[in-house]
Amino acid sequence: MFDKLKQLQQARAIQQALSQERIEAEDNGVRIILRGDLVVEEVFLNENLSLRDQELAVKNCFQKAVRETQRVMAQKMSGMLGS
Image 1 (spheres, rainbow, N blue to C red):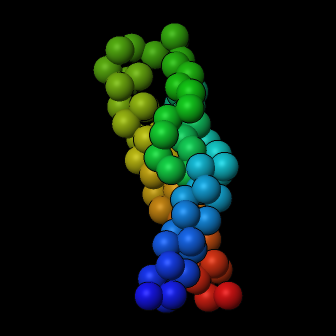
Image 2: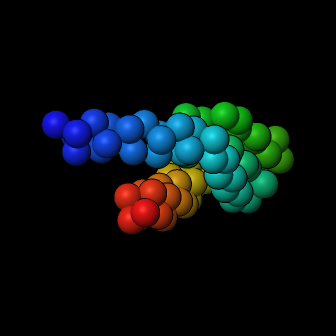
């Protein structure tokens, strides 16, 4: 029972730490800022791009940010669970 309580506390600590992380990705002048808990904080568009190019850039930025967030998440989890 205490092991489960400890795991729950660790999960909450990881979730709290991730919500404090900010990941920024950029593609073709378009930027996305994503929190570590996968909440989009900000999106900056490039008005010099066509609509289609902006759509692609947003998609690319989001994918980059999610990959980086997953990397940070794995790093934090291994650090917190390993200690």
